[in-house]
Structures are given as structure tokens and as C-alpha cells.
Image (cartoon, rainbow, N blue to C red; front, side):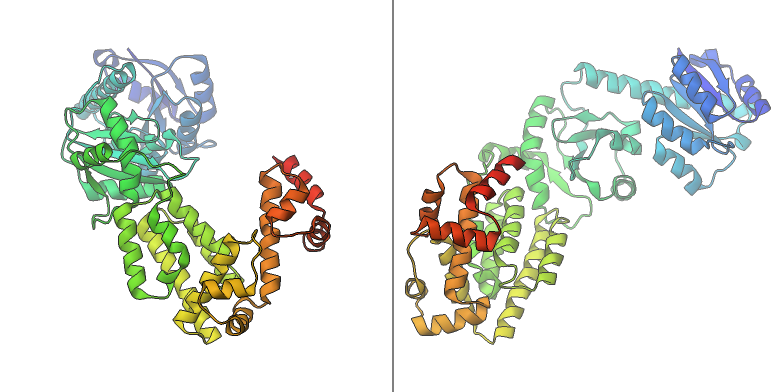
Length: 470
């Protein structure tokens, strides 16, 4: 039997609603009634309840707040709204909070009451049956050809948020390790789904429609979808606002590629550190084509963006522009957004080139010089070595570099060596004298004095503080 409680501040309304329907004939028993929200919560604490009929316009705790509290404290209890309001927005708010259905009291008559309750009870039992099968593992294969997948875009994304969707209320929800799936056994209105996803889940989740999953084993589905969907969605370029993917194609990709590891840095991003794509249209098009072809991990793309900001803020862009790019980088969810972000970065580089009055080739040489200096900071290099590496005369290089960096070559190289030393102090247990040598300083005493002048503490103190923070 379904155990139900009726909550309405008007006693006669409660009694009338309870007496209007032959509840036992539907397998429902009214186990209690309450005149306000607090009394209803106390009743739920005292007895087992499956269904709560809730009036929305009660004094004190409104029906909206009661539904919210029930969802938090008693998630297994379903709420059905009792209302005199049948305006869509009013009822929609209650459904958004978790109510499974609504009944307009002024329209409820003896003639239609039985049909209303029968439909509600059938829905609850159908839903319980489907979810029970999923929990017990009885559903081994997909019976639907299409499924809607949900992927959290933020670490705080919780499964409970999905239960606010009408799709999840009316269909089973299958939980995998990092994503969730709702089978769609009938034709669905994609545009309506998209609007509800946007209204209920906002930007915290991504959703994708996968086709061709009928008769696929759930275990295989989980393995294929977990491996391929996040990457496929990241690079999805279709015009549909709700992405659509073919399971056959995903399965082919899963069989062709093993999961990438962090150590296997994709080649397009490795080559792109030269920044030629920021200065030349052809290089940009080649870079974009290579990324779409190789499809680096989205984590690698995000790290590439962060590395650009760490390496080039101050040199190629003003602090306020760098801060704006750093803020917008956190909102990038796919390659299309990252591509737009990289174009903004490129615009900053080109603006810097114009301000300096330099040609593209000279600008590219100076960027190459900085990359060379950072990768060889621990070696015994000088200005002549760097100039030779980028095919510029030492005098012209010295002049251009000072304009570009806003400081002399010697000061810039020293700063790079100190940054290398800080990294070694944080990440290794090597003695300070060894770190001085590995950072390009021949005299460890000079290194310690210079380090304190620029960092504000001795190398040993810097290391001790860093170790203490771990």
C-alpha cells in the first residue's frame, strides 16, 4: 500500500479531499493529515510515508518551502501539489523544487477524481518498478534506442540535481562512474528537453543525446561512454543545440584509441609553444586542424592555456588583459570556446607587436629567444648563445630584447634562473649548493644572497615554508 499524508491549512478542505476518493481501491491509505508545514515534517519523522499532498498557499511555511525541506530530509517521499493556482509559472516552480505532479483543487470533481489519482498511482508504481530493476541489476541491456547522458562540469555536481528534471522523474536514471543516463523509450521533443536542461541544471552540467544504444549491454555501454563521450563532447562541432552522438561511432573510437595519459602530451600543443600561430594566419589554421585531428585531452588544452598565461603575462600582454583572460579561461568547456579564447590571446600578441613597432619575424625571434632561455636557464648560456640560436646578430638582439622584455638580457635570464631554483627547492630534496649549480649559478653563496634579495628569504627558508604547506 502507498502511505499518503494530506497537508492543507484549511481543515474542511483536507477532510473534503480525503473523503472524495476511494483510496483503498487504488492501493493508497491516508495515514495522516497536517495543517501546516512544521506539523507535516513532524509527522514524516514519526511514521513511514510514501506520498505527500501539499497545499502551496499555507501561512508560515509555504508549500514551496515544505517541498524543499521534504526533498532534503526525506528524499524518498514524493510530493503532489494541491493548488487553486493553475498558472504555468506558479506550478512550474513547485515542479522545479521536486513535486512529481499537481492537482488543481477547484477543478477536482467526483467525476474526474478517480482518473486523476489512478494516473498518479500508476506513474509512481511504474517509476518504482523501473528504478527497482536498475538498482537490483535486473536491467542488463538497453531497451531504448536513444538515451540522454548527463555529465557534471563542476566537481560539486550532484546526482540529486538530476531528479529535478521531468525526464528523470518519468524515466529510469542509470548511474555510471562519472556520468548518468536516462533511456528514452519513445519519441522526445529535443527542443523542450534542451530548454528544461538549461532552466533546471544551468551551466553546471552538459547533456548529450546518444543514438543506437538498443540491446547494448549496460556494462559495455558504461565502458564505451565513460571513455569517449567527454572527449567527443569537448570537440563536438555539430549545429544542434543539444549534441547528438552515434553509439556506433563512439564504439569505433573506443576500440581504436586507448585512453591518453598525462605523460603523452599531444604533439599539436607541444609545437604550439612557439606561438607562431599567434602571428600567422596559415600557422593558426594548421594548429587548429592539428588539434581537431589529434584531439588532445581537454585537461591538456586547459593546462596549455594556463601555461600561456604563466609564461607570457607581462611580456606579451598588460596585467589587466592577462587577468581578464585568466578569468574567462575558467568558463571554457569545449574546444570551440578555447579556440575563441586563443584568438583573444593572439590578438594581445599582435597588439604588443604593433606597440613595439616590430615585424612578425622579429617578434617571432624574440618569442623563440624567451623559450630558449627558459629551457636552458640552468645551462651556462650568454647573450651571444641565444642570439646565435635565433639567427640574430648579438647587438641587434640586445637592442630588440631590451625593448621587448623591458629589462636587460642579464636581468631577464637571472629572473628565469631564480624561478627554476624556486621550482627545484619546492619539488626536490637536493642540497642548496646543487640547486645553485642546476639553476645556472656557479657560486652557491652568491646564489643564496641573490635569492634573499629577490625573494625575501634564504633558499633554505623558502624550502622549509614550502614543505610546511604540503
